[in-house]
Length: 115
Image (cartoon, rainbow, N blue to C red; front, side, top):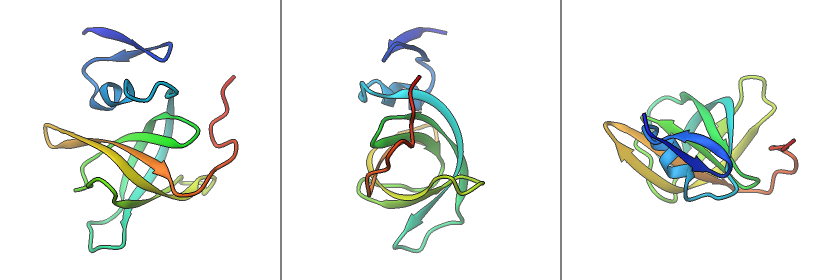
């Protein structure tokens, strides 16, 4: 498996989300379970996924929902510590799954704390 450097972390070239993260220089790897739902249109049930990368303004995750650029999504952790809306700013489809980047609709202070 080929490894590439992305923002100081090793990212698998095989991961669609990892490949998308290369376009976000501030992205840090994280593992935050969330439920994603599309706002404002008839959609499938919310989907459980994991935020794999984050920046102070963006989250990157994989999903199977039919997301499009500028869709508004709701992101919520099981414990409710993160419950916010975000706008889809990038989608890369690969083998039936989407690698998605979404930008928070409102500024979230300290959601991602780097050590």
